[in-house]
Length: 459
Image 1 (cartoon, helix red, strand yellow):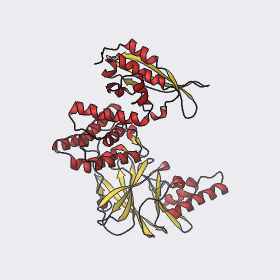
Image 2: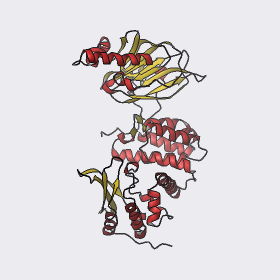
Image 3: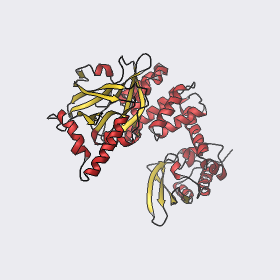
Image 4: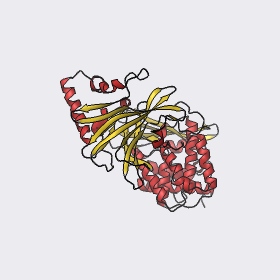
C-alpha cells in the first residue's frame, strides 16, 4: 500500500514548475509549458501556460485548472506524473490535448499508474490516453451515483461528449452509437446533461457548445424527445422535465405542416409566400447561402428530376418585424410523417439562403466570375442579387426578403435567413413509405423554451 501525504502549494509549484518542457509541434515551432500553483480561497489551483519559445517568443494560451484531491494527497504519484510529462519533451502532440486533459489530472486517480514510465506510456499514446480518461470518467460517476458498468465503446462516446469539443458529425456519430447500445447509458447521459446545464448557468451563455454550425441544444432536444425520452424510467423522465424547465433542452420543433397552413404560431402572426418553382434537371438540389455556394454540394437525398415549388412562412416578430421563419421545397405529393436531418447544413453569411439545382449552382458561380471580370469595381450582391429581392421589399424590410434569381434557364429561389447570419440545417421530410417528399430550413425565429425557463443572459 502506498504512503499518501498532503502536498502543499510550494511543493506543487516546485514539482510542476520543474516539469517545464519543450515539444516539437507540427509546424516546427518550439512550445514551452509552464506551471504555477496557488491556493485560491482554499482551493488548490494550477495555472498552465503554453508559449512559443522560438525566434519570436510569444504567449499562445493560458488556462487555470483546479487540482483534485488525488493530486493533493499523493506527492509520490504527482512527482511521477510530472516526470512523465518531462520525458515526453520533443514527442508530445499538444494539438491533441484539451485543457481538460492537460494536465491529465484524472490519471492520478488510476492506481495502476505509479511510476514516471507508467505516465509516459499513457501520455504518449493518444488512444491509450483517451481510453484511460474515458474509463475514469465512467468509473468516477459510478462511484458517486451507483451507476451500472459500461463497455469501453460507450465509455469512449460519453467521454468525447463530455469534452464539448466534438464537431457536428462526431456528435451525431456518438449519439447514434449510444442509441444502439444495449447497455444502460441513460443515467450517464442524464448526468452529462445536468452537468452542461450547470455549466451554461455558470457561463451565462451557451456559445461554447456550438460546433461547426451544429447546436448541441438542438441535438439534445431531439435526444430528449426521441430514444432517450422513450427509454427513461419515471424518475429519469422527471429529470428530463427539470432540464427543460432550466432551458437546456428546448421544446420540440413546431409541426411544420401545420405551420405552413396556420395564420398564427406562438402568438406570432404568420404570412405564407409562394416564391415560385425551381427546376431540378438531375434531381440534385443545393441549399446554401448563394454567395458562398461555390463550395456547397448537393443534399444527399433521392429526388426525381422535375420542377418543384418553394414556399416560405414569415412571422411578424415584436422586435424584429417581418422575418422568414422557414423555407420549404416540396418534391413530391403526400403528408410528411417524420422530419430528419438531411446531413446538410450551411452558413448564411449576409443573411441569405436559397434553394437551387446543382446546375443552377454552377451557373451562379460562372455568372459571378463573369461579373467580376466585366465590373471589377462592382459588387454582385448589391448590383445584381439585391435587385431580385427588391420587389418583395416592405416598409419593415425595405431590402426585400425573397425573390427568384434567374440566370439563363436556371432559377434560384433566394430568401432572407430568419434573424440574419448563422448556421442552419436542412431537414428532410419523409412520407409513410420512407420517401423524401419535402426539404425544409427552419431559421429558428420562434421561441422554443418552456414558459418556466429563465431568460437567457447576454454573453
